[in-house]
Length: 163
Image (cartoon, rainbow, N blue to C red; front, side):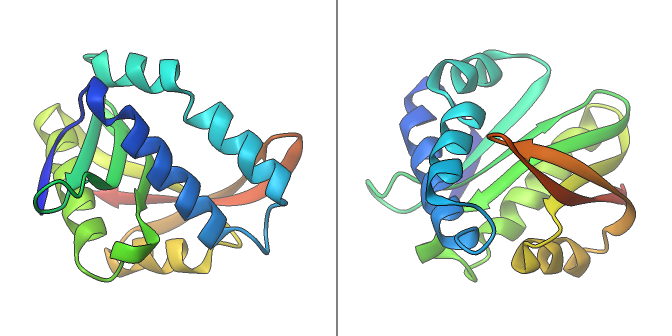
């Protein structure tokens, strides 16, 4: 497995991992239509391409051996103070193989190198595997909030880890 900065050729792979992850993780939380809307809104090709090209963002991809392509991704922003891990997803077929761990460690390293002293991550409150993932790394819940996916409000938990 290789973790590296994403480039424009990774957009389709990132969108595919996001779609498969949402379909696997959220069927009890989000409707099929909301999943489709959310993936299209949050992972629109032009938006991803902009973020990948931005000097302010760290969009990382994990790729498998050979021509396997993108098997996971992380998207973080920050240059001082508290950085934000906006998203981290691993293809459902590649979970529990250390991909998420490598992506999280690399994102935290990039944020620390950029001057961040802490990292914040948000997870839907109902996403039990996501919450367990961050707890396992020592992230502490600091507050609850609300996010909108499509037209639906959802409770989320905000976690912080001191770097």
